[in-house]
Image: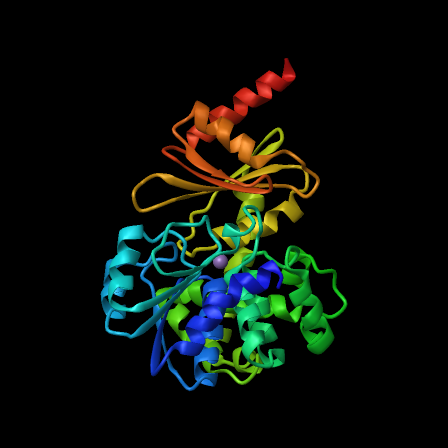
Length: 358
Ligand SMILES: [Mn+2]
């Protein structure tokens, strides 16, 4: 038995032993929506009633959602990484609870499936894990697209190639002959289009949009139910229009200081993450900061690097944190921080420039 079999075994036992009904709690992004839909389809296949319940927040299950879930015999929480341990404890006392997640492992007192407990640095979105679960119980061909858009939504294609090779084998139209690379698939494949369509529901429909998308995917016969859905198409066209406008604004209004590009996003739409993954292609030699003021008055900043740059962004952000009010972190290729004033970034960057010149 390989480690992936060991990983999913407790979840399979949990699901097979569940009776009557399962509440499925999920967050807001593509991985969450796909993960929840896969559990929904598994429960339906096992003749158990699945009840989809969206969490108020993407990163933690809020108190209210915990209260609502308490009345169910079985509860599954997918792709939500930061719920306090006491809150999970409270729920697991009164229900049978399964948590499937891929963020930093927690000490949760329930059935807990997290690949990083096996391999510290593995990158495996929950949609991929739920696909492993699904295929141990049923034939997976008709849900490959769901596992695919969820995994791609979390930029997990490159590290979980077997899923995408299987998609190529059985549903070729979704990925064609494209390289299994997250950026390429996101922009050029039909699967990428589906991912962006689902994401547009969150961006323009908020939590109601997320619930709507999850329902469509969970109840779907095939991906055509997404491609042909009127409401999803409205959100998607809006996304494409807004995105185009925003890229134009970046070209006109961003500040370029040497190697650095700094842009303040003023639009109220939540385009920061889509923009952050698009700009490295447009500004291949720059280090990119996209800042957006939040309702508390400080700035949330995504940091990315142009395709030609090799600088370690987690180290860069660490350095910024040491020299300004910023707090943050991340990976070599993508990092984030929050900072009191956008001017602090300008000052830091100018100092860098001077140091380089001398
Ligand atoms: Mn995820």
